[in-house]
Image 1 (cartoon, rainbow, N blue to C red):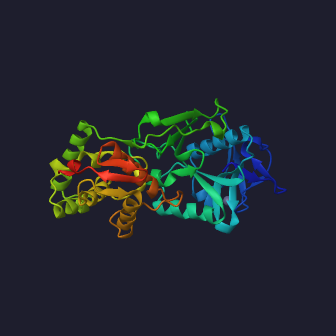
Image 2: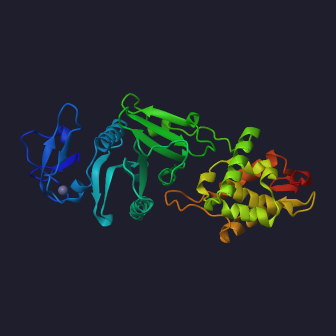
Length: 358
Ligand SMILES: [Zn+2]
């Protein structure tokens, strides 16, 4: 831990502590030992046999270095952060607590694997006392090519920035901000900030203009169709309801419409397979006769009906507002773009039947 109490109960940061001073853990009140050397992050540590919960968590270099860096940066941009704050009412200890635009934020710099439930419980704990948790992934948990369960739970939203995933690499002192409004998780959608060199303010971390979807190319479709064949062959559980749906509607893998392979912005919040939920909607549209006009209201109604019946499911993400509606609007834009729907007036489209011959 970085903060301990002096004899008179004043909080002291290890980097400013006196070598001869006596310091105590603010939680268990045991005396702690100052560790400050050339390589180490200055910190306090409990005696080996201590049974304090702070001691048993066993902090790593990465965790201590990271929270000190984040703390220093917040101080640099004038936000008056507080380090290692124990919040009595919820029995949780925030790595760093700070206020920005009249909102309290708790940084949870998560370096080691943690259970999904733990993240949910801690998130809801903070929310119950009106603190906004800010999950920042350490190196091991940082965002790779695919969203992990934890990455998805770490995504936060801020009105001005949209939905973001944050990772911090303590070794190279780099904060990585990924805009999750983007459909594709490629490195070009990420911004990296060196905290020590770049005295940036929050306002400089801006969301780039997100495209709402990425149409499936031939190569993409081919790859995904190959994958579907493999999944069917191995009878993979995650795909069973999709194959059931195809079976009920006499659909074969090789003739599925291209549109369902396209990626929609923010669809990572839906747990139903991306091909499956799009197929459900497009099968429903197929029932309409040529040139029927369909309104946005009607499409929304069907979408929420499918959600209500649990044919389409969402992940439980306590950090985020429900973004199903945004996802649906992106899908409608895709249908229009690929000429499955032809706009006739605002929020109304004509079914282009020739696109539904599959
Ligand atoms: Zn203690």
